[in-house]
Length: 224
Image (cartoon, rainbow, N blue to C red; front, top):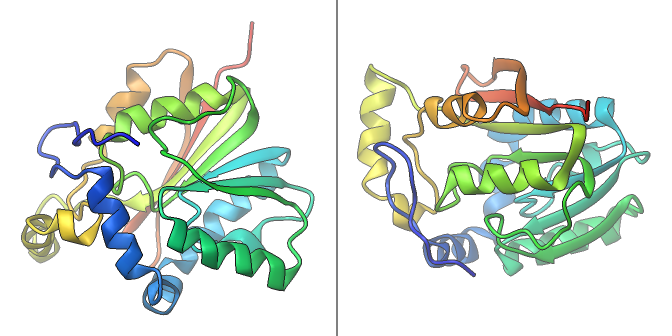
């Protein structure tokens, strides 16, 4: 596992060790705390995956809250850095008989062990703010997605001003303990897309509740 700290302008530095420790604490209560507030984003991400079809990598699958939302026709491989979170996901798969879930394994999103072009798509629900290096993570997702496939990201994008921005700045000082960055500018994602001629932004829209979260669909250019 990498202990690399974050990259990007103004990003709070976190490490894999911070994330593992935080989500070991969060695992027993994660579903109760985050299920409802994050449900619209997970639903939107699952709908995008279901339209795409094929074999999809779920990056940061966590406790697997979105797994029952995927069509049984979509084959899912889920990865997460936190084994305590994955244990809950494995039980969910077993209890609900989710036979389309091929595998759930511990893996660093910044160092995926899959071959190039292994998946028709990759979905990252509420993950990009939790990894030490968001750009490296997105590059890895793009690498393992086939030409013509999609990368689907749902995440909180930080407010630029107002009371929410002030709250995010306060919480951002505690990013290491939280396990994610409350302050995260869209430019991290937008500049990454702009830097890669093989990527195209298909969709960007705000989601409920209150537009706190954003869905981005990014297509990897087909082979000419």
